[in-house]
Length: 427
Ligand code: ADP
Image (cartoon, rainbow, N blue to C red):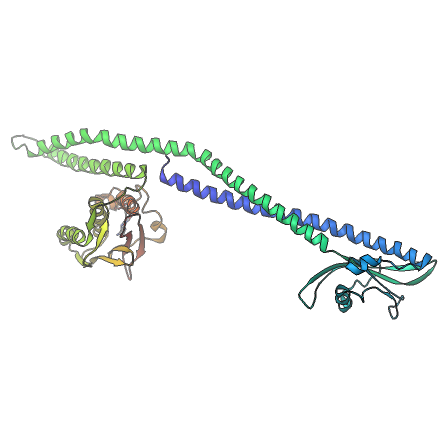
């Protein structure tokens, strides 16, 4: 089983391959069809002009009319013979059938230059289609031109054959397309597998390393705490200051390992199936109450706009962490005497959580990056505020685990809006 991002990448690559294969196959079919049809038409045009010369010779020799009775009756081949300037009709084989009548009505479309040909497409009164190849050539007796002989060849048979060929080509293309899609899926898998394995190993390493660091860190924290609480010790001011710093840094390190471990686990597999129902109204109120004290310390006001009866299927601990991350960020990056608003509301089938602040805001360029691990817009500022650059990555992981989405917008006139959308029913 692969990591989810790689499954998605594989599907995306397969779609891309499928689209490229599809376009290529269609282009090949179109080119093949056009080429075959072009060749047939060129060959038939040449043949028809040659046939006019042949029929003209027979007319001169024996006054034998060009087309057989059967060909005229079925409309397969028709002829029309006029004197050189076209003012007098010498022979007309078009008068008998409906196709002939149509041809006569389209006389203005006939080829005008001698030894030329043209494809005529016509519609009968009852909607029938007629497709004739028309050609004209002179009938010569010695040095004298007797007239112009037009011949019309019914191309219906060729059209039907071309349609059948096209249908066959498309069927073959469809089979080829599915085979190519399967091949694309296999190829994408083959290309991605080494990456996915490497990624999984790296995730495993991060999770294991964070896990292994927990115990020594806990021991260190306890030792530092012991030193701080030891009233009998006669430590210098410098040593006391160093121990205080050690306490702060070990605290930071243990938060970092906890976060890394959570993130590494969140990458591992599919969405967990949540069955527990979380009272989001109560949870938002509880977290907001906890954060109100911190906000007051920083001279910030925390406003609540929380709807009643908001129920969601999910992980209460994780959702509480999500709220803390967003509110904590809003407080970290807001100046004193400003307001932070936590809004929670039901919108159709989703729960919307919104944390709005009037702080420094985030540039459009940084909006794309803030969910990346260890990304901080202002490293010094974030660090001084106790930031690790992992808060929003964790928030994103929690939101994704719940099948939702998180977006960041500008607050007007100033500040940031973190907008989370979670489906009320777990998928
Ligand atoms: P950190 O622990 O540094 O806050 P986060 O992942 O939570 O890490 O946030 C990443 C960066 O996004 C922060 O360093 C900060 O620059 C920016 N950021 C997050 N939330 C806000 C906010 N509400 N207002 C302004 N900048 C923010």
